[in-house]
Length: 188
Image (cartoon, rainbow, N blue to C red; front, side):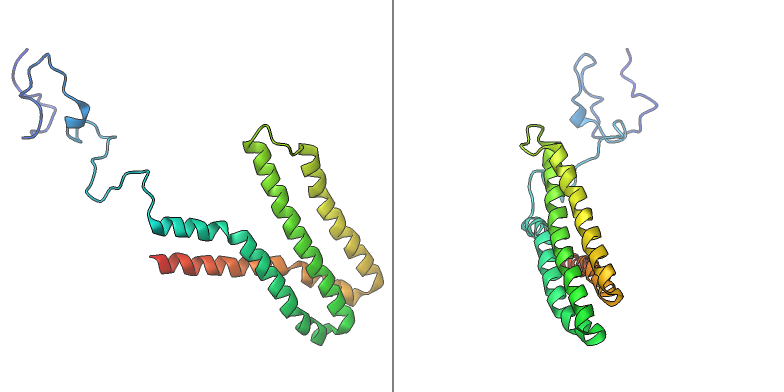
């Protein structure tokens, strides 16, 4: 074996070519050119297990998204009754109120179904039965279809208000998305 440096390696003053030939060189001491998939640490790198207070606040903010959307849905429902009454009269406002109530029940049932399904997937010993989750999921649509049919048979104007009331969760989600965007941009 010769003491000549390897011609394929770039010359480096920090390299461990001065080590005896039988002594192993630790991989942490090798330059990045030798181990291309190993990034060199930078002074700004924080240990991966440390979470900044800003990240904790953002996570807490995100965990409250569904309750905030439900509150927003309730507020929009109440505030939109006046314009619905003004535009469609009491029949349309009653249909709108029915749609808003069904939307709120549907939103809450969907939230519980998703949480139960996620718990069932993550926790194999969950107390929640899979058939019950699917039944509640289908029951939501049966409720919407039954109320829609009853209102449709009674009045086309009430049915129009009902459909508008069913759209309220979309408005609540759009408001939540805007709120989260504002918080995210303000954080940077």
